[in-house]
Image 1: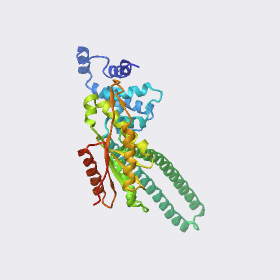
Image 2: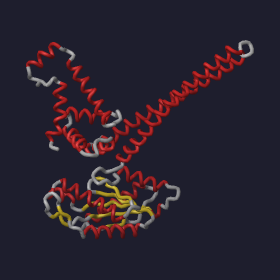
Image 3: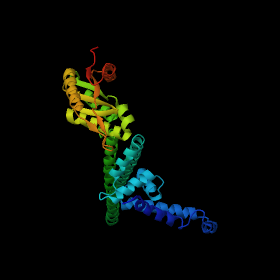
Image 4: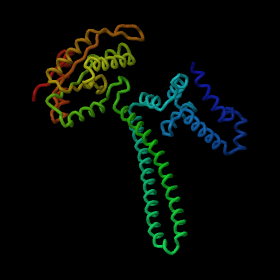
Length: 369
């Protein structure tokens, strides 16, 4: 489907909102003079269209979904509008997860804190609803108990009237209990959905959108988990920093898109070759972090060196131009973890840059302190 076809729905809606007239059409000026609330009518129509869009695609009323709908319907953000139009044209269609992935790709830095803040606010709102429903149930039960105590005192003097009063109280408390139960069920479903959204947001916050690997935040969380584990053997934890050699040359000669593909290839090559038991993360720029558990520093260095050799045997090609990129290598520094994580990372960094200064394409073990 071409771009014109994707723009057609938005054009038709804009034409509807503004009466099919251009801003410089004298008829539009005359109409606005006769109808001073035209702007309010237009805004109301847009509001309704956004609501219809969210309902039609089963999107929860979150701010980011309102923004996406507004961008698509008005074309205010061409990049988002084009991406949403493409999704709608595909068989998979539109979903909250695809929108989350899109925002993470387009706005990897600012989108995650905003999404987490929104989800935290909504979870707090659901919690407050649960507390309010529980309070109503508690008040109802307390009032019912007090009323029964009062009725018991009148039971001997007016048994029929008292029993009718008790029956009425019972019906009222049952009705209140059922209402509270319904509210709690609805809140529970909403909370479960929010918890799922929050889990995805947390995963996005710890994932590098380019390589699909954990980012620095994810790496540090994994590092903290291993360090704080009850059975942690810190003598067998090793961190390493891996830096692609001469990466600037790849960007300068072949362009940044090719550089991004090289980053993605090297990151996934490291993860694949090192295996699922070793954490590989994109630490920043062309640098990756590696965390091994259950190996000595020497063994970790030997393993990284084997991967380095295998990577050096590969010959990469620019997929867009078919021009050879050639051999891509990396330098690395490794250090044993101690109680001081920052110190271990600094030692690995120093070992890495010692390799960089003395020839590159090697793995170096940090000096024992």
